[in-house]
Image (cartoon, rainbow, N blue to C red):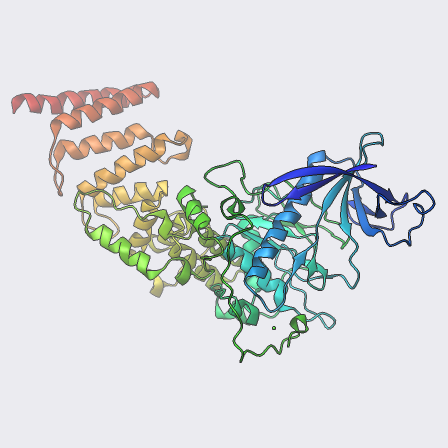
Length: 563
């Protein structure tokens, strides 16, 4: 007797019942981390004389157990991953593709009568040739025996758009279109174990993905790539599952067999967070996907299927709105529509109260931007070149595309390239002299500042204060950006800022002390700010500056008395 645990995708919880099972004592196969046993779920009508017969038509299943003692939660998280992937397979089928797919039902058997109550993963036996169609790191199956099929690749692409860029199902493998043992990448890398490579894994998928006839029939948009990338015929990796390192800066390849997954799984996408709640919590399995039927003239001559076919809270809230009825495109032009950009321009031009016009995050596509930024880093490191040399042209293309998505780090990096500023990312990447533009650089710098890049905010404030980077002095804007810098800095560690807050407060006080360039002189406010800066400097054990600013405060207040 055993306890069977199954996962309810609608309620997102496990439920149990009692069953009778028979498990062989010896494994018939093993993988990197689990061993496989023949098993049967016995009928309640079975008799003692038939229980030992493996050839009876009872349900044949495979029971998998980790070699080493694993945390109990690991087994349940494995099931959750596979059943969440099954949800996306059902959503894919609702889009009416040429051929339907399915992902194996997985459950857990707990042998309650044995010591320590051991757990086993249980799946039905798959008859046929087992093929791995893609991996979690860009590998695509394509050889003389298994020419690359369209359906598995289109399914992975579909999940990215249908989830609003929040996740992607990869590691598609199985017999025919019955898949098992998948992996899910999430936008932030949280959940689903060490095989979840976050946007880095999504970037590796799109680097080798060529939209096929099924992608087109489902209305999926083409991911933006360079001509060189589109001409690439070689795939990435060798089909082995990659595990993320603690820093996600490198990816170590580990062996993986068809009988096992060599990673431990965590929970799903931020399911306990209201701001980053899993897309499935909002739509549920009942969400409707538009049925896009194939044109009768469409020809499927491919070997597929034997067919004859960063981010931020507001960005995540927008992603949640992109359920399967309104998928979020993979191309920048579709993800950030021109209509939204025009609306932003109108709001900016109508801003008459001198506030800094902040571009709303819902008009950006920062998750897609992060995917492009990761591709820029990969090209910069030469990951896709045989000689491991940097492909700076492709790196620059994806860097610009990431900036078009509104990703502040990409905007700031481009600004640094144009303005010759120090930056941490892509340090050795350079622009050709004919591409360097001071005005374009400052435009990127100001966009990055509006999107919250604290270093960019300081540079823009200084530019309007001193009239650098080809802009005229505008102390009204300088004061606004200096204040924005103090607001951002107060929310982070002082070690993370370029200048102490009291230095910036004193600089604002100086602007009001003298006035000009559009800013009215205000000695009273200047004295208050000098005093605030002096007190902060005193708290930071900088008595020399504190005394200086106390004296300046007295001087400007004396001007008030004279007036």
